[in-house]
Amino acid sequence: MRLCVTSWSFPQLTLDEVGGLAKVLGIEAIDIGYFYRSALDKARLLAEPERYGEEVRKRLPVAVSNLYHLFGRDTLERNLANPAHRAENLADFRQALKFCKAVGSPTVFILPGMINGAQSRSQALDETVESLKPLIEAGSEAGVAVCVEPHVHSYLESPEITAQMCERAPGVKLAIDYAHFAVSGYRQEEIDALAQWFGHAHLRQARPGALQAKLEEGTLNFPAMFATFRDAGYDGWFASEYVHQGYFDTLHDDVLTETVKMRDLFRAWSAP
Image (tube, rainbow, N blue to C red; front, side, top):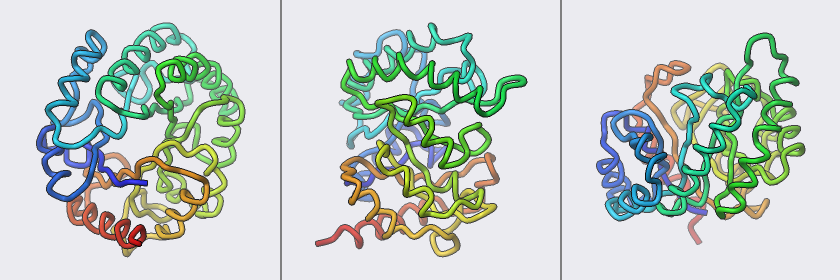
């Protein structure tokens, strides 16, 4: 298990600058996506994924640990619980997988979908499962693990319904961020029960009512969490994901300081 950092943690840095910062901090890789100054050129990624992926891989001083792929311009547009966009989403996803292979990313993560119109949670889940099946197959063919991130404000907001999705979509993995459950009051042990499906991880402190908190001011027990991953046979990346965003009022922490604290905590836990 190794530590990386998300490029969107530093919204005022370019992708090259995030890569350089990660190297300075002794962090081996970065997660990349389509946001802020570090954003990939999504249009180019979809048009010439292999060439673009090779360029990004060669220019960064660290590895790429994950691609965060968003089908539309936001969480609602072309989301997986809307069946109207399956064909175009699959076409784009195949290009994203080619990019992942070229850039060296072992995983890609996507969002589960939203409540569309008058859907119930169960109906949204039904549609997402059907949307996921060809995406998982394409990922398997490409050798890239397909991960879904349960998140607040989607319909996938509890460990129970998340387990249902994983059971009904064989081969799917989770890009797990305990904070998205902890903010709603779920206990860490309830989230641990999903460990068999963990494919990528985001790390930040949280507590009920707060999606992000300083390391000393939340309820998540990270040494216990790391051991849960280890005991489940996880051998992937842990991405420090402290952010400075308007989303859920995550604007009040020193991202660099919290990233370093998380780095030091992980190093202390994993030391011989």
